[in-house]
Amino acid sequence: MKLVVINDMHPLQNPGAASIAYSLAANAQTEWDVEYWCGSQLPNNPPENSLVNIKSFNVDSIRERRRLESLPRRLWGEFFPGRVFWWFVFQVIKTRPDVLWVHQIGTRFPRSIFAFTKLFGIKTVWTIHDFGLILPRKLYPRDLGILDSAVDTFMDHLQSFSHDKHKLKFSGIDYSLILEMRLVVVRILASLCGQIIFISSMQQQIYSCFGIHSKVVIANGIEPCACEVSSEARFRNSILFAGRATGKGFEQLLNALVENPEMHLHLAGGPELKLQAERRLETTRFSYHGMLNSIEIHNLLHSVEMVSVASECFDVYPTITLEALRYGSFPITTKVTGNFPLVNSISPRLILEYGKSIDLNAISSCIDFSSTWGKEVRENLPTIKQVVAEYQSYLIN
Image (cartoon, rainbow, N blue to C red):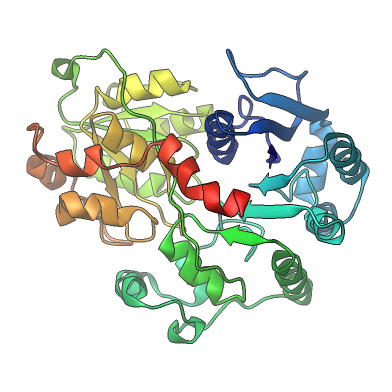
């Protein structure tokens, strides 16, 4: 079977959903003939020892940035055929795939490709990684009319809801006409897919309120730990923040560090993290590691006690939570993350109250690094191979 995995971004240039999509493609390669299609700002540079054939089209980074800064241009490029659409059509005619497995698109690949695949009878499976179909940015509880003080209660109710859009009660988004029309088009295109797959039940329930439905939820997986790192190297009273700051509770974490002077912050990500930390903390209070590859992140996770996943936005299924659990540290998180039940099953004390101050010392004192604390959760995390096996029936049938 010829399987094509489609994602806007190149896995080496844009970690995140692209890395997840590529990992799934690489694991599917053992069963099927797989290609990975994406856009790239650099000459094609496949990951080392890759068995997956990556096909990419060149992206003009300056033109793309200008388009993304303008909402009308961004929305036009999100849906309407252009040069990339015809590149896609040519590749489909040339490759003749049996199944298209679509991941994150809309920035480079237009969503109108779903109309093409429907018209020509190509089986299409769409894994949705974020809430970008609802709003072309991060989705926050306040967008749904939920006060900060009511978020945790809302999320508790969400856990018990069945797959029924009428059971969720909120005031909804005050859409402009153009965003309302965008949502209508998104619903139509989503209906053209053979199968939509969500990553968390939280994501499934929220999307159902906006008319995008699926009964299928398949969570992301994480590879087993193969690091050669001694747990004795762990930094005492340490916490890691990794990734981008927007919507991830970084300012709240900095506030907590000001109030908890014995805690030390480790940062992994762009230079903006260092600049923000310098405004609030003495330079001896944090260590900036820069942009790290996956192996470096995993080694660092073995060295810190906690990882901050204090998301303020609805966060579908943050990978850093899985990585923390797999590689030896403990995530602290909020109820608006799709994998908070995993953390809660270790200890409710690792769950932060939404919008409230964080007592890092109190959380640190409750963490038990014995071999049994959280062991069952860590050992039962699905691998990427297991996730691909779960997808198999939807890709074949």
